[in-house]
Image (cartoon, rainbow, N blue to C red):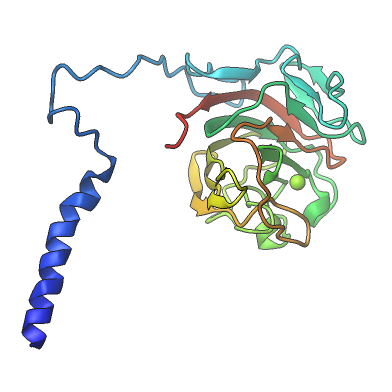
Length: 259
Ligand code: MG
């Protein structure tokens, strides 16, 4: 009897494997089908150096190219962004408030470069604090975490209050650093019920620091608020935490809905 059960379980396991493996494959096309449409061509651009920002991929929406903040507005009232542009970067102007993109974005690949203030000033959360807010709700922390201690789920590249980064890949203040983020936003049904939580992957200076983590809801200080129904596309925001953090070379590529 036990043997029969085991054989059945094994048979079910075996037969279910191909179904699972094929779940993502479009069966409309034969394997290696020469008629299958080729993916569009994207010029990958060039990598940034400490001296100069790289060139974004050809299919990216450029959100800051070193010249102006025309793609950004004040988050509070939609007025012109008040942060300072100079020498190919822009700087957080304290107490002017967060800024956000004019355009709304859904699931995406996002590239952001930032440099922490020099000389370094303050400790813990009071040291080069800013933030990249996907959908204006989910913060990937920007902080000077180079040889500086704070709580783990609030250091640079943390999903604030939820996930510390896998490693601290911070560069010294004054040096340009990169975040490359893959973000899949939450989905809600027509009644507002959560069907899929947000997920995020982050590379900090090219190092994997968040590996497809599942967000518990919007990020907040000292709280983990639950999800509330939101549109599939929302603006990207940057945080004014009162510190003159620099940003340059920001671009975004939207991913196909549902993937
Ligand atoms: Mg912050």
